[in-house]
Amino acid sequence: MSERIFPNNFLWGSASAAYQVEGAWDKDGKSESIWDKYVRIPGTTFKETNGNLAVDHYNRYKEDVQLMADLGLKAYRFSIAWTRILPNGRGEVNQAGIEFYSNLIDELIAHNIEPVVTIYHWDLPQGLQDEYAGWESREIIEDFVNYAAVLFEAFGDRVKYWVTLNEQNIFMTLGYVQAVHPPKVSNYQRMYNANHIANLANALTIKKFRAMGMTGKIGPSFAYNPAYSIDSKPENVIAAENYEAFNSSFWMDVYINGKYPKTVLKGLEKLDVTIDIRPEDHEVLANSRPDFLGINYYQTNTAAYNPEDGVSIGKMNTTGEKGSSEEAGVPGFFKRVQNPFVERTNWDWEIDPQGLKLGIKRITNRYDIPVMITENGLGEYDKLTEDKQIHDDYRIDYLSSHVDAIGEAIAEGSEVIGYCTWSFTDLLSWLNGYQKRYGFVYIDREEDDATAKLTRYKKDSYYWYQELIKKHS
Ligand code: BGP
Image (tube, rainbow, N blue to C red; front, side, top):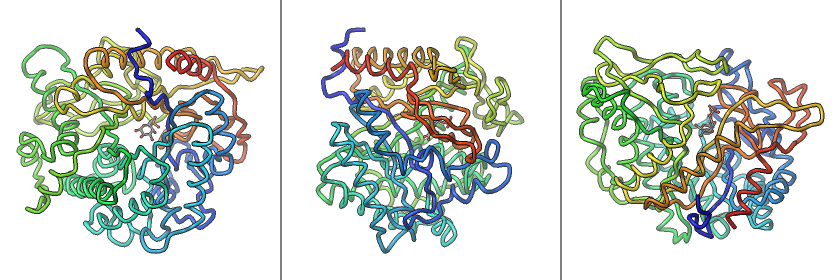
């Protein structure tokens, strides 16, 4: 792959999210988020892990930024905890929260690292959940837009890249269908209504950004698992088309064209779902095309025909016991099956770099919009050797093949503006604890906070990425 394929200003980055790295969950005026509360329900997370301490980034951000600088990172994507900025969800701004992120942004800029700020990475203030059921009420729209405006005002002079909502498709389906994220609901009707409200909040935040005259770029981050058909049997190909429409176009079409795909709206009638779309909503959605589409890519999904009495919600592998996930789907529309042509991780995630190329190309062809890869990475067990090294050649293989795939997509006509690996340091995996590691930097801790040493060690992949960035600069 020719190095010149990637533009000079390409954002070679890495990512994290507040709840997964910060810790200090109740410090300096921060209030409780839905995740702070959810993890305390027994049996919801792997070995009852939580982000109370996480990897203590709140107290060690300078050390972490220094590690980023030493690596040569060009961009760092992180999220802001709404609960630090507005402990009541709205109203009075907590200056200590502003200060923390302001210092982090300054530290990054001082080291020539571009901050990419995610406004919402799932940690809704619990107060808003209690008051009006969070995303299920239209009241959240105003509160969310105001929260975003506080961030634009405070950091807009220094932050050029903004991500509105992280993986709306994931926090909606896991929160309101699979009932494994807060608020632990399993109800299609509630999910689709909440999701529509999130679409309006996203659109109006982009509108606000522009109304405030912000000069940067803004867009949502979507978790895209491009769909394949298991084979060319026509009913399987139709299932794959359904899969792509229900799980991807249903979100991306709204972000970009402001419209839901008609076949999904019709299909939802069969599930007894009617989305509360009001006449004035159409205009809101139609006038907020993002500047770029953030894509979080981990794997493709292979689809097959699923009869009316077929599989529905299936168990996810959150233990790292290979092969423990179950088939899942929507009866009458599609089900997800194993792809015989690709390898899987210990958490049953399919490893498919060509799928990233496919996804980027589909986006270019369907939407013609610049893409930022806002997450991509490999969650695996890592071993700290006695001489404090981590030989994660499997991660290097994973990441380098995905970088090649992006290069190919660019060479074939797509516009990609950046690549943020997931993640910079090891961190808390929402449901999978600390044993599922993603970082370039190993953090010396297991599931239990009491034994956490939190020392940072550079993995082999750290040096690999350092070289890669050097080569492309
Ligand atoms: C994405 C989330 C991240 C991160 C990642 C890895 O869906 O945006 O926050 O957690 O997936 O997932 P997991 O931690 O489940 O392995």
